[in-house]
Length: 128
Image 1 (spheres, rainbow, N blue to C red):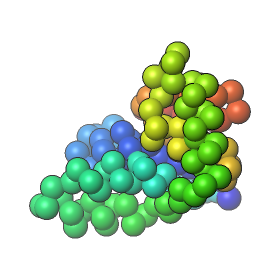
Image 2 (cartoon, one colour):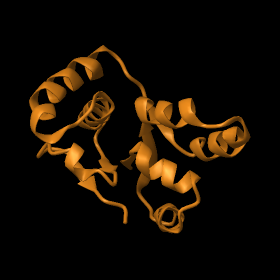
Image 3 (spheres, rainbow, N blue to C red):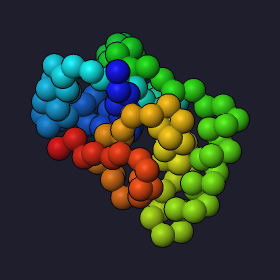
Image 4 (cartoon, rainbow, N blue to C red):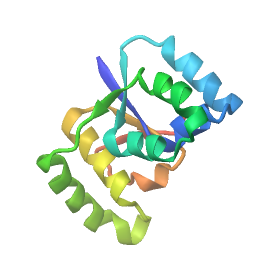
């Protein structure tokens, strides 16, 4: 089973009701052979900024995703990735941590910000 990691931008567009995002997830769920994941930091980006009236729907949607933990190995690897790729590609700490989770656990990243994941050994796909 391959892990499919979803960046916070993809999650947020779905929660905002964007047709492209909803269509993407409808099609994705019908595929076989994938587990839906997100990174701890991407989940945090969504949960920290949700409004009280959005809480139930947001947590319900996020319940469909496994969440990659952040541990010492991930943080140390993310630090290396950040120092290497931040100056030229503008990746931030959250991007680096997700990339490290993918390098450790395998899989691919779905994001609208493909430029934030320039690492040759990470599979990145734009969902729409």
